[in-house]
Image (cartoon, rainbow, N blue to C red):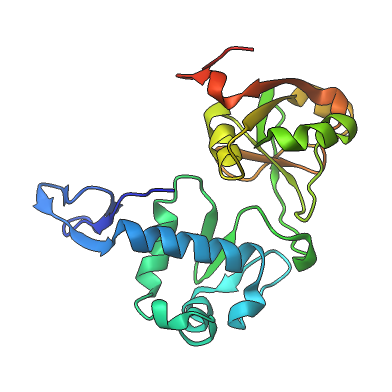
Length: 230
């Protein structure tokens, strides 16, 4: 996982990934290494374990940004490595997150998707009634189970699907070398009463993918420049 440095424009105050903006030198806010570390930490806290830093999460997944930063610096078990974290780092990270993993509203922040089922978070997602094809990344070792029972959310509330096959491969490769993508028929899901929800610009979530709605399986090694060899 690699990310660019984040800068803040000294003219327009916009967070950018380039050291120059509006014709001026921008101010470094978050270097690549810290950006990755903070992104992973926020994902863990907001999707799985707010109690690890003693923050309260409401039923829609929101927590206070002030409490989040305070909790990381005072209660995270490796807090000595995160004393640099400020609210601005959180705002900058969310503003430029490529996957739209997080959402800020006023003084509150939440993960848009990926919550552990034990958190009992219920987010009201907009329904996608137009998308035709979706993709789910996994590894070859999981196929036997999936091609018998369909795609289940396991410990999460939803199954995550992507709009782009390359994104699904990226996810699959995090779990092993034998990365594959399941091609899912979204119209089939709707016909079976499974609603497709919009979690972010590139991510859709569903409760379950029946076996009948899996159109094909593609090896990530066969995906070249957006085209697939099946």
